Length: 95
Image 1 (cartoon, helix red, strand yellow):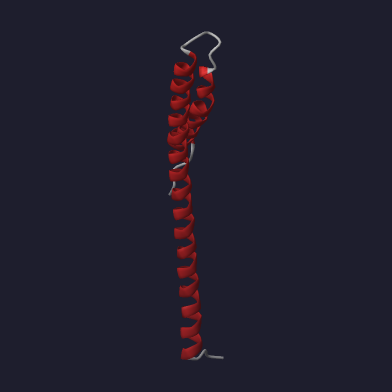
Image 2 (image 1 turned 30 degrees about the vertical axis):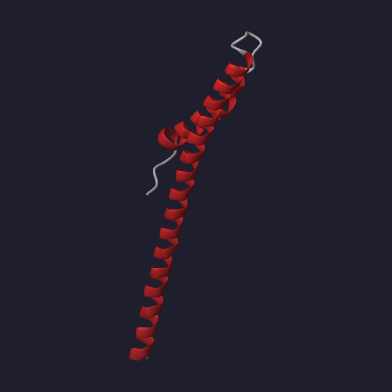
């Protein structure tokens, strides 16, 4: 039984439409990954800056005494360093 021209055109449009939808989904996934990595970069830099600020604040607050809690600033600083190390060295590149 021969196919009509309309049936062939409709089936072709469905296939092309499906390919278009898949391409849009890939693009959306790629943009989501880029946003996630950029957010982690920004979060890492902010944590490092907060850590440095806490180091300076507690060091100046207590005058550099041995009992000074200035090392508390290392906690957010190291979290930020860990985030940056992950983004730049450990995460797979976004394709």
